[in-house]
Image (tube, rainbow, N blue to C red; front, side, top):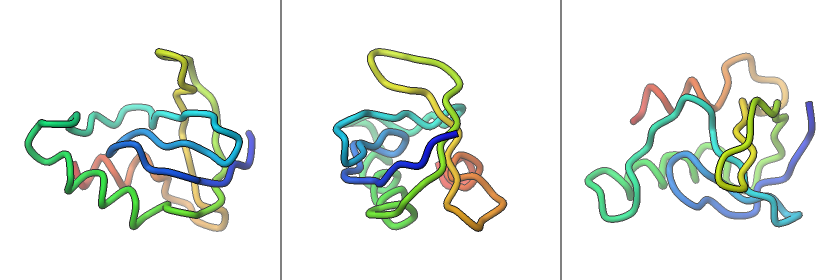
Length: 87
């Protein structure tokens, strides 16, 4: 597991860290740009993890992104689980 600092939210299931690496939340299928619900999903992820430090566990690679399970330190529920409930 690795600690990363969130720099930018790309969409409802992808973010960039301060080291310019891209991460996709495993098992979260948020709407893509121009799809209905895109802004709502992106805003939800921004409110949840924007600027936060996360603990990530890499599960795979996809399109140059690390596919991860992410958690805010001290919280039991993963960001993935929270986002699945919202999208």
